[in-house]
Length: 234
Image (cartoon, rainbow, N blue to C red):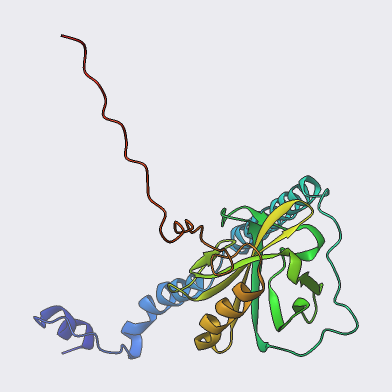
């Protein structure tokens, strides 16, 4: 019994290799089918890749234009202060990342003027003179102690969101504008100490505000009793 007949009679239709004269009629169509499977529509594939690259380039260009437009709106911001030659004795130092600056209280209103919008590594040094921010590959800046307003812990700035308390936010004044700048130390356990140290220098921080206290009355002084209110004459 031939191989082709066995394949027809088998309930499982087991395919057995054909050989001999019966294999000749099937060899041509099978070979043609295998050969056609290797054909690829390269024109369509290249078109899809080119379209994707053009879309990515368009998005990047729009982002660049938006960045420039925002920078032009913030052109009134003065040049950033630079650190004095003698910073004095360091109170605290740390290394970490600078995550950007925004208008104070508006964590999505990013400030990009003078390189403040570029995220980078940062080395922070706090002295009695102020806060020195050194950024390798980006613009350094210095916040004089007189311009420090407060420091706090937060979780987000300039579109960057971390765990609660994961960011050290320093609020400072520059060019008549209040700015929030966000940092994250490589040793986040130090954030609390930084908040306390910055607030001790800041003139507007809650820890520096003196609560109003009512002066006590002198000893022996008596308070005049309130005269009773007379009712209407009867």
